[in-house]
Length: 227
Ligand SMILES: [Fe+2]
Image (cartoon, rainbow, N blue to C red; front, top):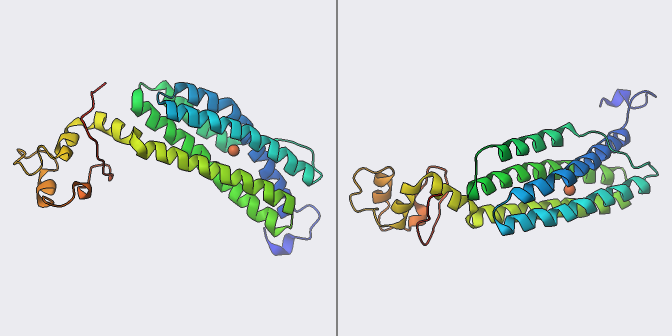
């Protein structure tokens, strides 16, 4: 907003923008409350399902905290349709309609859920900063609590993805690279297999340093069955 416009009566202020964003966030939480059970139900991993279910409970708490924020500002509790969250949820639904299964599906569900989390983290980061700048201290506290839970939910999803789901899904996508990495073929003149030259040049070094096509490294104890 231009400073020169700030005093005009029909120009909206940062406080108006703040209320707008609060209504948007409230609607986003309501949309997630409807969408998360579907994501949780689709999850194959018990840990992922539990993480999504527990975030559903937190999400209900976020809507309630936002209601307290509105009240603290003397405003009516009101939502305003959040197009951003609608789009993210639509993409998540589209993924569930694809033919993914097992850990591949779980990896995709995590990707969808993390998009939602990051969207919310951006929204609450802004809301906290604006509330602080305008001296709405009650709102700052409540919004910070929500932001911290969104961050923790995001980190939980990362730990699930990197704690086995991505590696397992990747092993089904590229079963042959797993054997290389097991050390059974590496450095054994692996017949020009993909990655063999890299692998042999890294012979003697930790296998964790061998780059994989997706930029990640992995270590698994046993080859997994292909689904
Ligand atoms: Fe939330």
